[in-house]
Length: 213
Image 1: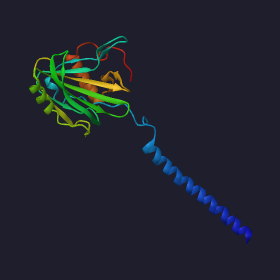
Image 2: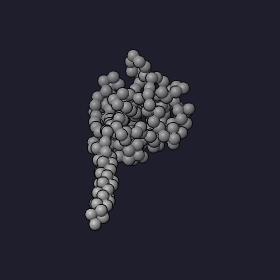
Image 3: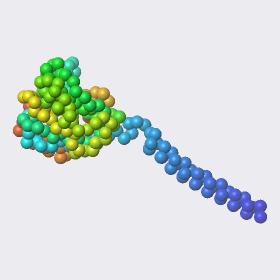
Image 4: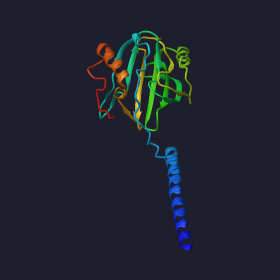
């Protein structure tokens, strides 16, 4: 009888250990999924082409960077008519505003987006507004707000042609360092980009400097 009791007790303890270990594993997995390292899901973005009505594009200027000084830290999509600007990937609006660009002598609106902990996107809506009134018209044409989550392909707003030179400046940071956005376009976005670049691109390569992926 005592031997039978010991066997039963041993089996019960083993089952408790197995069940407890399984449950503990589930709890640990759930904890790590929600509280794991901040960079565990920070995959590089895969961009769609950011201008929906590509027929209004007049030129594309590439990313140019070297070890000593910044020359051009994004990609410019120049327009000859009102452009519909869409979200190139899923992201969250981090900031939105209007400011006076002293170098260009014009007012411009802009957005910044958190893609994940590693990647941040900036889109400047440079309509080349010659006064603050037109600058605010451009700002009002941006229809997303701070804190809003946007999905790939969603309309962010319109870029107006207030003066020659109007464009969006499309800039990407990885861990606060500027990188060439072209490297992050997905298959469809790259086909559109490459086709347009062959027609209206500013040079032989949209990434004409030091860059990293």
